[in-house]
Length: 155
Image 1 (spheres, rainbow, N blue to C red):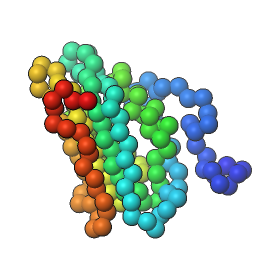
Image 2 (cartoon, helix red, strand yellow):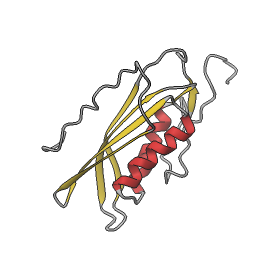
Image 3 (tube, rainbow, N blue to C red):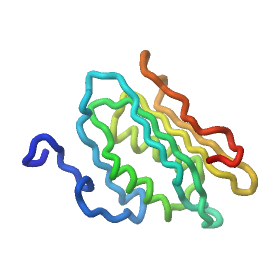
């Protein structure tokens, strides 16, 4: 915690931060869940996510949707934005990138439940959608539809 015990120590919040050069270099900040006794869902949408094709080096674009039911911590949003931005120069297949993001967040954050949907824009005429979740959602958790339509000029 900081000297002001109301706000935890973070590396990014309220600080000048540069985009990490790789996902491995990215540091995610976690803060205490303000409602640890409540069962609720947090959603992050990243409609302009980019990474690089590991074969051609060409950019790949996706709309990522991350949903989770927090445990003791929540991910700080600025550090998450920097982490996701670090993939701009990262080579990876859609499946590896999507599942890797989900597994890292799940392992570090230890939420009650986690899922990620990677809705990848087509290259070569085929959109690829990749989904990963930590398990069955807890009973009573509201899990909304991710709201990304099947590809029809996805927007």
